[in-house]
Image (cartoon, rainbow, N blue to C red):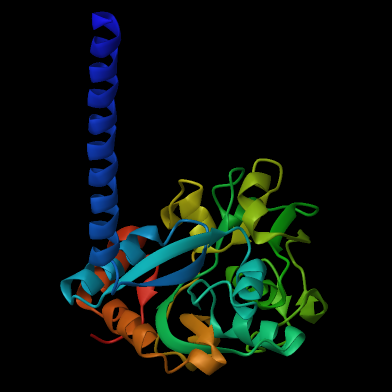
Length: 286
């Protein structure tokens, strides 16, 4: 009988402890939800992770301003899928593309997307794990370039500037391989998925791809065999300025404008310069 009473007292004690723990958990949950009740989450679609440090700086600015906004980064392998997700309402903003790419997507797919801010300009450079000089290229060498229309055109302009090919008109916005007038180097140009080009370098003579993929691969723009010069005052560079994009019906969203304001600050410009080591140039004023 005494044993049963003792067991009963132990059971009651255990139940009391569990009740206290449960109550404390509920209390914490209520506190946490109250604490975050006024916080707005804004999802931003990126390509790769190269810009993570930049958006961390944006978040810090938002926190300093007590904006009540939390940035949630979502990485995609290809910008085509990021734009699709945004058009479907799965993302609030995107920040990976330039005007030319956005306009091409809108023209082809009818997306109602609008640029709400400019960020930086990122060059396309020529990389090689095989050669150290442009003079080393020989006839039949394979060079990989991006297969989306706007970056195909940019890459061809880089090859033109490097003297490996000659375009009929190097001021044309989106030249194609059909616009090649001369190929004095005899290179064989192959179009590939931009994200895969870094992995092709051991087997190709050279490749051209976006800077974010270079950074993600642990490389630097200093590794480039040839770097195209950047002039932010040159109007021909305008189509290649990177932008923050919203759905057109949300382009004046007050919370999005807070994000833009936080982005267009000196601390974020410093983060861009530090992250890209000067290879990417901020284009906004602060």
